[in-house]
Length: 327
Length: 300
Image 1 (cartoon, each protein chain N blue to C red):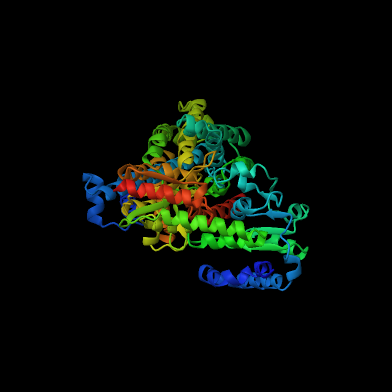
Image 2: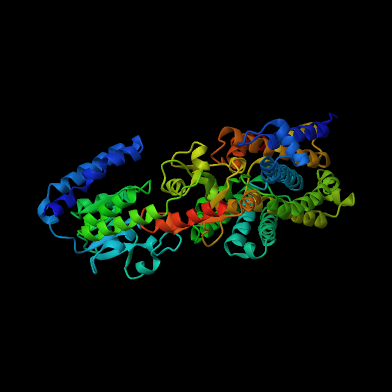
């Protein structure tokens, strides 16, 4: 076995550092590090600790959440097309977040923002599992996902269009594509606990998902509690994806591409794929966020644009392969 | 009589300024507009009398028309005139029916003069002209010096030259009284999504007039553009002027509550906000100038 996890961890660390050191202010390396670790230099400290650090942390966490939840859903459904963005979990979370913001609930009680997004994400996972069934075929899963995404995206747009705030309608793109621009530590404190708890729950699924590769009966005879596994999956995905979307918008394709790329490297075992996908997702989102700053520094290019440019060809490739397998 | 005829020919007076202010890509439109106005000049008899039914379709002409029009002369103003975040004359606007700037809606009000902005509702303006309605388009002002000129343009269009001359003179005197003789301090104008305005904007001129140098202009922005929060923080402005948030939530406006911006403002100790008074080149902008003068003097 290749040392996949240490290599991925190194990659994530390098990208995290790059995310901290790259920005429109063009600070020197020494200045940046001194400001970050020792608090020297007033304006530089603000830039490093209040602007770049939260952005890098959220990129790391949101990416990890998306990669991990993608791997977990694919393991449970034994379907390589399951991914929070494609099957409508992210867009349902976005609807929850937008409702909390536009009703004023989030202004009155900050925790309402992640909780409402979490509720949206949880309901959608539940609905997808009901519609596609525990052994849902690719077609049922994707159709249910398309319907759910279309419905929740339309409702999100409706809510934003009806808002008295003229900026809200312009932000439809943000909720569909995601962005980490100008996030603050407030957002980190709000979302990080939910993302961490959700990821911890999802990471416990490894052994159960390994057994499930042999089929449900075999898994049950190996002592896997399937209803419990499913509940953990739903709650873990809802908490982590919900919180990630609430602060960063819905970024697609990370959960599709990353497990697919890493699966051959970890011997296709879900228990090893889960942590690898978390690290891979973090690396992909950090890289995408760095790219938004390098490609168009003053334009706030959306994250989802870049992940879709990479992810959509992957998606087509997967469908092409499945078509040949099924034929 | 000479006066009235001259009233239709105001286009000639502001064309040189337009060429300075309007980017080259907009020139064909401006030339076309000049041509239309020149044609209006060529039809003097109808202009001898002041228009009796005036409809304004633009927030800035709304306010100038409300200040200048004779009783009963102004029939309708735009809906924005009733928006407290954009308009300084919400109470006065309540006395007029509002229009949304649609050609059909405006035409049915049977106006003999329509006041519009240069860039707003061009389709509607075009259609109204083809229906035979006289439309006067007023360009946005980009400096305080242009405000008296703007007042005179609208005054001439309304046939209220005397009132306009008085208002313009009052404005010039008010502006002179608010002059600040202090070395420039740094100020930043910061709006949702990190938008700021630089050189060649009215807000920039308000800062220049009150002893501030604009961080946006120093960063090389002409007109408006995005100034990343990092660069705003690094510029260490002594005063940050932000906009008043709209009701309902938006991610665009969250940047104005960002902790980094809050710390910059805390250090400055003075917070100013740009409200409806900053939007248009009307006498109300003197309140914005007075507010910034107070902010500048408080820094000493």
